[in-house]
Every structure is written in structure tokens, then in C-alpha cells.
Length: 70
Image (tube, rainbow, N blue to C red; front, side):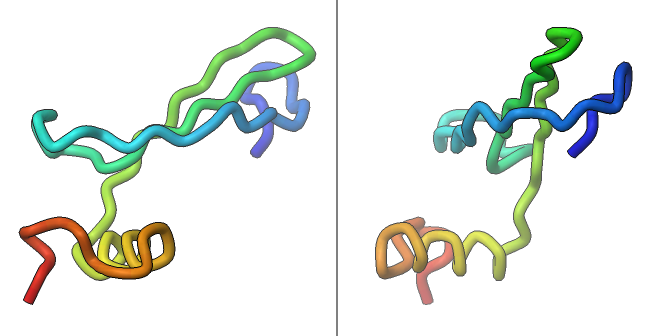
């Protein structure tokens, strides 16, 4: 991803899952930074049920969220 200000490649800083006690609007927050102009970017992402199920299966080997269990 490119910086909007200087067009340099942004550096990925990490992904953070939102806890169950959050408002539930978003599932993951990614933070990025620009090594050239020091811009900091946060990207909020909302997974659909299928995306959340796949992510949990990849991370934990099974679905762990009660609302996704069948």
C-alpha cells in the first residue's frame, strides 16, 4: 500500500483483533507507517461471517466464536 502523502511503500506494523466487548462494528485493525514522511495509517476492516470463520480456522484450527458455531 502506498502513502497518500508521498507515495512511498507503507510498512506494516501489525494487526489487532477487536475484543468481544467492543461495539462489534469492526473485527480487525491494521496499522501501517511511512518511513519517508512518518505518516501513520490505521485500516479498520469488517469481516463477514464466512471470512471470520475462515480466519478462526486458520488461526486456531477450529471455529472458536460462539456466534459462528453451528
